[in-house]
Image 1 (cartoon, rainbow, N blue to C red):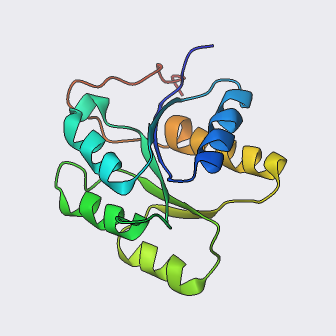
Image 2: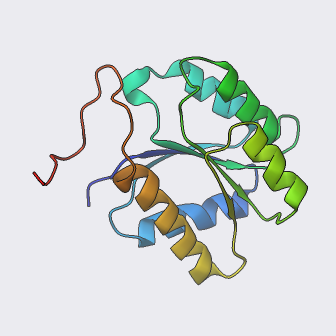
Length: 152
């Protein structure tokens, strides 16, 4: 089946990455998923792509060594070319201070990773569906809408 949208998935945990990729695959009309295994790799990848190749959304783990999710979020928001890029924090933390810190730095959303696989699958499916299909993005240079509007 054809990929629907583009996601940059940033997570240092190989188990979480594998589960996320399985979840996207099981969801059916899965998006194109680009994986970065560190904050530094995510920033390098974002620096290498042109406007039309930017992801529809960045799904960003909060707790990573060296460059954590908050540092990545700040780096994205500091670059005018990336400032409007939706960034969804995916974390196991329900701590109010973590949630507030992410929103204060410009997170588009904060989603807690469910522990149970079926719930994890549903959460990732709903998150990717919203950001790659339902949410309207400003047009980027050279990028066309994935499908025509319903004419309504």
